[in-house]
Image (cartoon, rainbow, N blue to C red):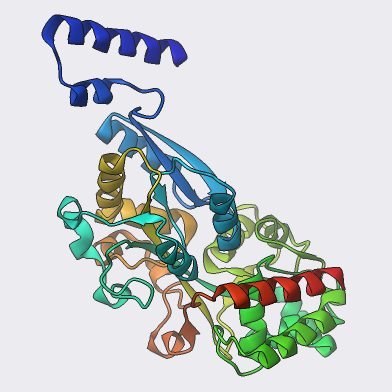
Length: 369
Protein backbone atom coordinates (compact mmCIF):
# COMPACT_ATOMS: atom_id res chain seq x y z
CA UNK A 1 0.00 0.00 0.00
CA UNK A 2 2.85 2.40 0.82
CA UNK A 3 4.31 1.79 -2.62
CA UNK A 4 0.95 2.55 -4.21
CA UNK A 5 0.72 5.86 -2.37
CA UNK A 6 4.27 6.75 -3.36
CA UNK A 7 3.66 6.05 -7.01
CA UNK A 8 0.44 8.08 -6.90
CA UNK A 9 2.30 10.98 -5.32
CA UNK A 10 5.02 10.82 -7.96
CA UNK A 11 2.39 10.59 -10.67
CA UNK A 12 0.71 13.75 -9.36
CA UNK A 13 4.06 15.57 -9.22
CA UNK A 14 4.68 14.57 -12.83
CA UNK A 15 1.25 15.89 -13.84
CA UNK A 16 1.95 19.15 -11.99
CA UNK A 17 5.24 19.51 -13.84
CA UNK A 18 3.72 18.75 -17.23
CA UNK A 19 0.33 20.41 -16.99
CA UNK A 20 0.46 22.82 -14.06
CA UNK A 21 -2.39 21.22 -12.11
CA UNK A 22 -3.80 23.24 -9.24
CA UNK A 23 -3.02 22.75 -5.55
CA UNK A 24 -6.53 21.33 -5.12
CA UNK A 25 -5.70 18.63 -7.68
CA UNK A 26 -2.46 17.95 -5.87
CA UNK A 27 -4.26 17.48 -2.55
CA UNK A 28 -6.70 15.05 -4.15
CA UNK A 29 -3.82 12.90 -5.37
CA UNK A 30 -1.76 12.97 -2.17
CA UNK A 31 -2.66 10.15 0.22
CA UNK A 32 -0.04 10.88 2.87
CA UNK A 33 0.40 13.41 5.63
CA UNK A 34 -1.70 16.41 6.56
CA UNK A 35 -3.19 16.91 3.10
CA UNK A 36 -3.89 13.22 2.46
CA UNK A 37 -7.14 11.95 1.01
CA UNK A 38 -7.89 10.34 4.36
CA UNK A 39 -10.89 10.79 6.64
CA UNK A 40 -9.94 10.32 10.27
CA UNK A 41 -12.85 9.18 12.43
CA UNK A 42 -12.88 8.96 16.25
CA UNK A 43 -15.84 6.72 17.05
CA UNK A 44 -17.38 4.35 19.56
CA UNK A 45 -16.34 0.71 19.40
CA UNK A 46 -18.28 -1.31 16.80
CA UNK A 47 -20.43 1.63 15.73
CA UNK A 48 -20.29 1.30 11.95
CA UNK A 49 -20.05 -1.66 9.60
CA UNK A 50 -16.91 -2.33 7.61
CA UNK A 51 -19.08 -2.67 4.51
CA UNK A 52 -20.37 0.87 4.99
CA UNK A 53 -16.83 2.17 5.39
CA UNK A 54 -15.67 0.39 2.25
CA UNK A 55 -18.63 1.70 0.25
CA UNK A 56 -17.85 5.26 1.31
CA UNK A 57 -14.20 4.79 0.42
CA UNK A 58 -15.22 3.67 -3.06
CA UNK A 59 -17.61 6.59 -3.38
CA UNK A 60 -15.13 9.28 -2.39
CA UNK A 61 -11.97 7.52 -3.62
CA UNK A 62 -10.47 8.08 -0.20
CA UNK A 63 -9.42 6.09 2.83
CA UNK A 64 -11.09 6.06 6.28
CA UNK A 65 -9.08 5.45 9.43
CA UNK A 66 -10.71 4.96 12.83
CA UNK A 67 -9.68 5.20 16.47
CA UNK A 68 -12.08 4.09 19.17
CA UNK A 69 -13.33 4.96 22.64
CA UNK A 70 -15.79 3.15 24.91
CA UNK A 71 -17.01 6.05 27.05
CA UNK A 72 -17.51 9.80 26.67
CA UNK A 73 -15.10 10.46 29.53
CA UNK A 74 -12.45 8.51 27.63
CA UNK A 75 -13.15 10.58 24.51
CA UNK A 76 -12.80 13.86 26.39
CA UNK A 77 -9.72 12.69 28.28
CA UNK A 78 -7.91 11.65 25.09
CA UNK A 79 -8.71 14.96 23.40
CA UNK A 80 -7.62 16.88 26.51
CA UNK A 81 -4.37 14.91 26.50
CA UNK A 82 -3.61 16.20 23.03
CA UNK A 83 -5.16 13.79 20.55
CA UNK A 84 -5.64 15.81 17.35
CA UNK A 85 -6.13 15.45 13.63
CA UNK A 86 -9.59 13.90 13.79
CA UNK A 87 -12.02 15.08 11.14
CA UNK A 88 -15.12 13.58 12.76
CA UNK A 89 -16.16 12.66 16.29
CA UNK A 90 -19.37 10.93 17.38
CA UNK A 91 -19.97 12.20 20.95
CA UNK A 92 -23.07 11.91 23.10
CA UNK A 93 -25.03 14.95 24.26
CA UNK A 94 -23.28 15.67 27.56
CA UNK A 95 -19.88 15.44 25.86
CA UNK A 96 -21.23 17.73 23.13
CA UNK A 97 -21.84 20.39 25.76
CA UNK A 98 -18.24 20.19 26.88
CA UNK A 99 -16.79 20.23 23.36
CA UNK A 100 -18.89 23.24 22.33
CA UNK A 101 -17.94 25.18 25.46
CA UNK A 102 -14.27 24.38 24.84
CA UNK A 103 -14.50 25.70 21.29
CA UNK A 104 -13.32 22.30 20.05
CA UNK A 105 -15.81 22.00 17.18
CA UNK A 106 -16.15 23.63 13.80
CA UNK A 107 -19.56 24.76 12.57
CA UNK A 108 -21.22 22.69 9.86
CA UNK A 109 -21.83 23.88 6.34
CA UNK A 110 -25.39 22.60 5.96
CA UNK A 111 -25.39 23.37 2.24
CA UNK A 112 -23.13 20.32 1.93
CA UNK A 113 -25.55 18.11 3.88
CA UNK A 114 -28.81 18.00 1.86
CA UNK A 115 -29.76 14.69 3.50
CA UNK A 116 -30.17 16.48 6.80
CA UNK A 117 -33.84 16.66 5.78
CA UNK A 118 -34.10 12.94 6.58
CA UNK A 119 -33.69 13.42 10.33
CA UNK A 120 -36.78 13.17 12.52
CA UNK A 121 -37.34 16.78 13.76
CA UNK A 122 -37.84 15.51 17.32
CA UNK A 123 -34.09 14.72 17.42
CA UNK A 124 -33.07 18.16 16.17
CA UNK A 125 -32.86 21.33 18.22
CA UNK A 126 -31.41 19.64 21.28
CA UNK A 127 -30.57 21.45 24.50
CA UNK A 128 -26.84 21.08 23.79
CA UNK A 129 -27.08 22.39 20.20
CA UNK A 130 -30.42 24.19 19.66
CA UNK A 131 -29.69 25.25 16.07
CA UNK A 132 -27.73 22.14 15.09
CA UNK A 133 -24.87 24.45 14.27
CA UNK A 134 -22.34 21.76 15.16
CA UNK A 135 -24.11 18.41 15.27
CA UNK A 136 -25.99 15.98 13.06
CA UNK A 137 -27.79 13.07 14.81
CA UNK A 138 -26.16 9.73 14.03
CA UNK A 139 -27.86 7.13 16.26
CA UNK A 140 -29.12 6.70 19.79
CA UNK A 141 -29.10 4.10 22.51
CA UNK A 142 -30.89 3.56 25.78
CA UNK A 143 -29.01 2.48 28.89
CA UNK A 144 -30.86 -0.45 30.38
CA UNK A 145 -30.79 -3.95 31.84
CA UNK A 146 -29.84 -7.01 29.82
CA UNK A 147 -30.49 -10.42 31.31
CA UNK A 148 -30.67 -14.17 30.89
CA UNK A 149 -34.42 -14.61 30.59
CA UNK A 150 -34.59 -18.24 31.69
CA UNK A 151 -32.26 -17.81 34.67
CA UNK A 152 -34.12 -14.80 36.06
CA UNK A 153 -37.44 -16.60 35.63
CA UNK A 154 -35.99 -19.60 37.47
CA UNK A 155 -34.84 -17.38 40.34
CA UNK A 156 -38.07 -15.36 40.32
CA UNK A 157 -36.21 -12.07 39.99
CA UNK A 158 -37.58 -8.82 38.52
CA UNK A 159 -35.95 -7.69 35.29
CA UNK A 160 -37.84 -4.43 34.85
CA UNK A 161 -36.35 -2.43 37.73
CA UNK A 162 -32.96 -1.03 38.69
CA UNK A 163 -33.50 -2.95 41.92
CA UNK A 164 -31.94 -5.97 40.22
CA UNK A 165 -28.51 -4.28 40.26
CA UNK A 166 -28.82 -2.37 43.54
CA UNK A 167 -30.84 -4.41 46.06
CA UNK A 168 -28.97 -7.07 48.12
CA UNK A 169 -32.12 -9.22 48.44
CA UNK A 170 -31.93 -9.81 44.67
CA UNK A 171 -28.19 -9.52 44.23
CA UNK A 172 -27.40 -12.35 46.65
CA UNK A 173 -29.05 -14.74 44.17
CA UNK A 174 -26.89 -13.61 41.27
CA UNK A 175 -23.64 -12.65 43.03
CA UNK A 176 -20.71 -12.68 40.64
CA UNK A 177 -23.01 -12.96 37.64
CA UNK A 178 -23.69 -9.27 37.13
CA UNK A 179 -21.72 -6.34 35.71
CA UNK A 180 -22.32 -2.60 35.57
CA UNK A 181 -20.95 0.03 33.21
CA UNK A 182 -17.52 1.43 33.97
CA UNK A 183 -18.90 4.95 33.52
CA UNK A 184 -19.27 7.62 36.16
CA UNK A 185 -22.24 9.33 34.57
CA UNK A 186 -24.12 6.19 33.50
CA UNK A 187 -23.84 4.29 36.79
CA UNK A 188 -24.68 7.37 38.84
CA UNK A 189 -27.63 8.03 36.52
CA UNK A 190 -29.00 4.52 37.13
CA UNK A 191 -28.65 4.97 40.89
CA UNK A 192 -30.25 8.42 40.78
CA UNK A 193 -33.20 7.15 38.72
CA UNK A 194 -33.72 4.28 41.15
CA UNK A 195 -33.74 6.78 44.02
CA UNK A 196 -36.40 8.83 42.23
CA UNK A 197 -34.17 11.66 41.02
CA UNK A 198 -33.29 12.94 37.58
CA UNK A 199 -30.45 11.20 35.79
CA UNK A 200 -28.85 14.65 35.47
CA UNK A 201 -29.40 15.61 39.11
CA UNK A 202 -26.36 17.48 40.48
CA UNK A 203 -27.44 17.90 44.11
CA UNK A 204 -24.46 16.78 46.19
CA UNK A 205 -26.66 15.14 48.83
CA UNK A 206 -28.37 13.09 46.12
CA UNK A 207 -24.98 12.12 44.69
CA UNK A 208 -23.90 10.94 48.12
CA UNK A 209 -27.07 8.84 48.39
CA UNK A 210 -26.32 7.33 45.00
CA UNK A 211 -22.74 6.62 46.06
CA UNK A 212 -23.93 4.81 49.18
CA UNK A 213 -26.37 2.75 47.09
CA UNK A 214 -23.60 1.78 44.67
CA UNK A 215 -21.09 0.91 47.40
CA UNK A 216 -23.67 -1.28 49.12
CA UNK A 217 -24.27 -3.22 45.90
CA UNK A 218 -20.67 -3.35 44.66
CA UNK A 219 -19.59 -6.54 46.53
CA UNK A 220 -22.16 -8.52 44.54
CA UNK A 221 -20.95 -7.33 41.12
CA UNK A 222 -18.45 -9.28 39.06
CA UNK A 223 -16.94 -6.23 37.38
CA UNK A 224 -17.29 -2.76 35.94
CA UNK A 225 -17.40 -3.38 32.20
CA UNK A 226 -18.09 -1.37 29.05
CA UNK A 227 -17.59 -4.06 26.42
CA UNK A 228 -16.95 -7.60 27.70
CA UNK A 229 -20.50 -7.99 28.99
CA UNK A 230 -21.72 -8.54 25.42
CA UNK A 231 -19.82 -11.81 25.09
CA UNK A 232 -20.31 -12.85 28.71
CA UNK A 233 -24.09 -12.49 28.46
CA UNK A 234 -24.14 -14.32 25.14
CA UNK A 235 -22.29 -17.38 26.47
CA UNK A 236 -24.12 -17.47 29.80
CA UNK A 237 -21.35 -16.39 32.19
CA UNK A 238 -23.40 -13.33 33.13
CA UNK A 239 -27.06 -13.36 34.07
CA UNK A 240 -27.57 -9.59 34.37
CA UNK A 241 -25.74 -6.60 32.88
CA UNK A 242 -26.17 -2.86 33.01
CA UNK A 243 -25.38 -1.59 29.52
CA UNK A 244 -26.41 -0.12 26.21
CA UNK A 245 -29.35 -1.29 24.11
CA UNK A 246 -27.25 -1.89 20.99
CA UNK A 247 -24.82 -4.05 22.98
CA UNK A 248 -27.70 -6.06 24.43
CA UNK A 249 -29.10 -6.54 20.96
CA UNK A 250 -25.74 -7.95 19.87
CA UNK A 251 -25.59 -10.28 22.90
CA UNK A 252 -29.10 -11.55 22.18
CA UNK A 253 -28.23 -12.13 18.54
CA UNK A 254 -25.01 -13.95 19.41
CA UNK A 255 -26.76 -16.24 21.91
CA UNK A 256 -29.38 -17.12 19.30
CA UNK A 257 -26.86 -17.71 16.51
CA UNK A 258 -24.76 -20.05 18.62
CA UNK A 259 -27.78 -22.11 19.67
CA UNK A 260 -27.65 -21.43 23.40
CA UNK A 261 -30.30 -23.04 25.56
CA UNK A 262 -31.24 -19.65 26.93
CA UNK A 263 -32.18 -16.27 25.50
CA UNK A 264 -30.84 -12.81 26.25
CA UNK A 265 -33.47 -10.12 26.69
CA UNK A 266 -33.28 -6.43 27.62
CA UNK A 267 -35.71 -3.87 29.00
CA UNK A 268 -35.92 -0.23 29.99
CA UNK A 269 -36.43 -0.15 33.79
CA UNK A 270 -39.74 1.20 34.96
CA UNK A 271 -38.02 3.95 37.00
CA UNK A 272 -36.66 5.43 33.78
CA UNK A 273 -33.27 5.52 32.10
CA UNK A 274 -30.85 7.48 29.94
CA UNK A 275 -31.32 8.07 26.23
CA UNK A 276 -28.02 8.89 24.55
CA UNK A 277 -28.11 10.70 21.24
CA UNK A 278 -24.81 10.39 19.41
CA UNK A 279 -24.04 13.03 16.82
CA UNK A 280 -21.49 13.53 14.06
CA UNK A 281 -19.38 16.65 14.63
CA UNK A 282 -16.33 18.29 13.06
CA UNK A 283 -13.31 18.59 15.35
CA UNK A 284 -11.34 21.81 15.00
CA UNK A 285 -8.10 19.89 14.32
CA UNK A 286 -9.42 17.99 11.31
CA UNK A 287 -7.68 18.45 7.96
CA UNK A 288 -10.45 17.29 5.62
CA UNK A 289 -13.76 19.04 6.39
CA UNK A 290 -14.77 18.37 2.78
CA UNK A 291 -14.57 14.59 3.32
CA UNK A 292 -16.22 14.96 6.72
CA UNK A 293 -19.24 16.69 5.17
CA UNK A 294 -19.42 14.05 2.43
CA UNK A 295 -19.34 11.30 5.07
CA UNK A 296 -22.11 12.92 7.10
CA UNK A 297 -24.34 13.26 4.03
CA UNK A 298 -23.50 9.69 3.00
CA UNK A 299 -24.49 8.34 6.43
CA UNK A 300 -27.81 10.21 6.24
CA UNK A 301 -28.89 8.26 3.16
CA UNK A 302 -31.67 5.89 4.18
CA UNK A 303 -29.99 2.59 3.24
CA UNK A 304 -26.63 3.54 4.74
CA UNK A 305 -28.21 4.68 7.97
CA UNK A 306 -30.38 1.56 8.16
CA UNK A 307 -27.30 -0.61 7.75
CA UNK A 308 -25.97 0.79 11.01
CA UNK A 309 -29.15 -0.17 12.89
CA UNK A 310 -29.44 -3.59 11.27
CA UNK A 311 -25.84 -4.34 12.23
CA UNK A 312 -25.66 -2.86 15.73
CA UNK A 313 -29.26 -2.62 16.93
CA UNK A 314 -28.93 1.10 17.60
CA UNK A 315 -31.91 3.41 17.63
CA UNK A 316 -32.19 5.51 14.52
CA UNK A 317 -33.35 9.15 14.20
CA UNK A 318 -33.34 8.94 10.39
CA UNK A 319 -36.85 8.69 8.96
CA UNK A 320 -35.52 7.69 5.53
CA UNK A 321 -33.90 4.63 7.13
CA UNK A 322 -37.11 3.17 8.57
CA UNK A 323 -38.22 1.27 5.41
CA UNK A 324 -34.89 -0.57 5.35
CA UNK A 325 -34.62 -1.51 9.04
CA UNK A 326 -35.47 -5.09 9.99
CA UNK A 327 -39.09 -5.17 11.29
CA UNK A 328 -38.15 -7.04 14.48
CA UNK A 329 -35.78 -4.22 15.44
CA UNK A 330 -38.39 -1.54 14.81
CA UNK A 331 -40.83 -3.54 16.95
CA UNK A 332 -38.42 -3.76 19.91
CA UNK A 333 -39.42 -0.95 22.29
CA UNK A 334 -36.10 -1.12 24.14
CA UNK A 335 -34.48 0.03 20.88
CA UNK A 336 -37.31 2.15 19.48
CA UNK A 337 -39.15 3.32 22.63
CA UNK A 338 -42.86 4.00 22.41
CA UNK A 339 -44.41 7.24 23.66
CA UNK A 340 -44.86 6.02 27.23
CA UNK A 341 -41.25 4.86 27.47
CA UNK A 342 -39.89 8.02 25.89
CA UNK A 343 -41.55 10.01 28.66
CA UNK A 344 -39.34 8.13 31.17
CA UNK A 345 -36.10 8.66 29.27
CA UNK A 346 -33.80 11.65 29.56
CA UNK A 347 -30.53 12.81 28.10
CA UNK A 348 -27.62 13.53 30.40
CA UNK A 349 -26.66 17.19 30.67
CA UNK A 350 -23.16 18.59 30.94
CA UNK A 351 -21.71 19.33 34.35
CA UNK A 352 -19.37 22.16 35.27
CA UNK A 353 -15.76 21.89 36.37
CA UNK A 354 -16.57 21.91 40.10
CA UNK A 355 -19.21 19.21 39.67
CA UNK A 356 -16.86 17.14 37.52
CA UNK A 357 -14.19 17.24 40.21
CA UNK A 358 -16.71 16.18 42.85
CA UNK A 359 -17.96 13.36 40.68
CA UNK A 360 -14.41 12.19 40.05
CA UNK A 361 -13.78 12.11 43.78
CA UNK A 362 -16.98 10.15 44.37
CA UNK A 363 -16.02 7.75 41.59
CA UNK A 364 -12.59 7.19 43.15
CA UNK A 365 -14.23 6.46 46.50
CA UNK A 366 -16.56 3.96 44.80
CA UNK A 367 -13.70 2.19 43.04
CA UNK A 368 -11.53 2.00 46.16
CA UNK A 369 -14.23 0.58 48.45
